[in-house]
Image (cartoon, rainbow, N blue to C red; front, top):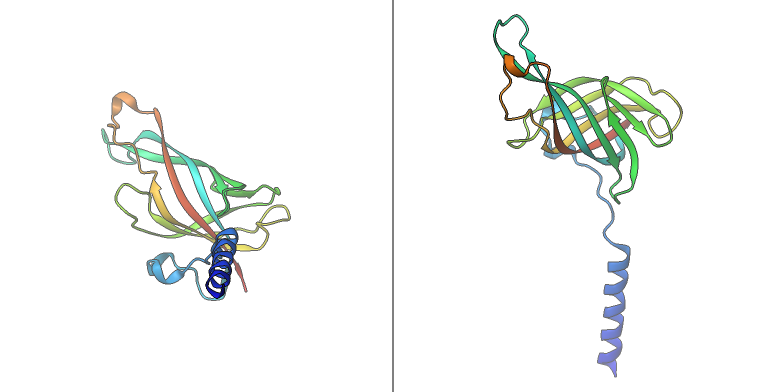
Length: 180
């Protein structure tokens, strides 16, 4: 009888743990290159996963006759919380992070660091003051980390296709910070 009670209690604990799931983890600066770490005095206020498209355009290189390159034009992505619910969008130009509540901000790139091969770089952006009132109000920095895809197209960029645009898929975590 004692064994049945112990097994029942253990089963109840396991089912409770499965139902509640693991607690969400806050993002760690320690695993990032120093260049894209947020300065001391800021705390994580929101973690999102951005998934969408990046547009590139074939253009002539500045001051380099007869040389061409794919140039980043802008992103168009949905921002999802860790539970998979859309909480905002990321689009540009200019690069703009917007919450579903209407608050939004643009930013200035501070630094980049290499990511895995085939993925856009990690990035640290200093936020401009937010427009509107809501989740983006008071955001001071946003990091782009855990990037997958998004690099310029592999197809040739030449005089024959100047002005053409290509869209590539990407995903990245966007971590938002506010001053403490």
